[in-house]
Length: 132
Length: 220
Image (tube, rainbow over all chains, first blue to last red; front, side):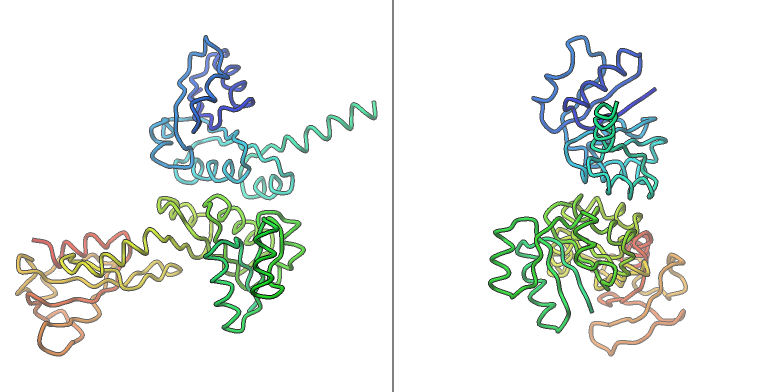
């Protein structure tokens, strides 16, 4: 699958390297070239420097042929906006968004953005550990 | 009217001040406590410290009874998210967002944000108006209706000069509403009016057909 990942932080880089190892065609976008140090030396995908909130940058990153878009930057709102651009402007078939704030995650899930809240999941996980 | 303004920067501050002077009930949301204190000192207790993107904050300030929600922070993504929360969670009838990047206008419209304001576009339009050699000037944009009013000049090289209105290849979505000749009095054009060099045509059009209309009227 052709996958575009925005944000090469710990999660973005890890995800990129896992999917790359699975044989997918990966492009990872970040506005700080220093972030790309997190990618493994045998990473076979493309690392591109640029702001994923700008439509021309997304076009350069090949969003028009992407089958999936994932937003994993630190900013909830940045992720939400990039995902909405991917979904509504570039009609990417599947869009996945990280939203820390559980309330915002629920709202945008309701507005048709497939969203995951690490906060919610991790809290549940901790609770399960504690109760078990 | 109860109006909520998000972002206590210079724009938010003066907007709040102006709206208060007009007699509206205004609440300004600002994240930074220091900024919030300064505003409270100057304008009275109109500033609430909080994040305008957070449902809990918006709940506290009674967003569900707001008539208008205006997001004017310096970040497009924050303005977009807070307007969407206001619209979809609290059903605020009118949401207005400030845009830094004019490319985002399309997206904001698709997401149902009622009005977008871009300083970049406003300045560009002002320049257009001042530089008289430009054949097309935007006079008014009716964003909710999708119409815009433009002023188009008939230039010496325009092929439309000397022609009847019905002979022109005007786009179907445009309406010529007024012709202001250089010397004579303005008149409402009909199919049989003759356009002349130096005429200014005031027309209603859509952003999509604007270029076709300009070509039909002032194109060489």
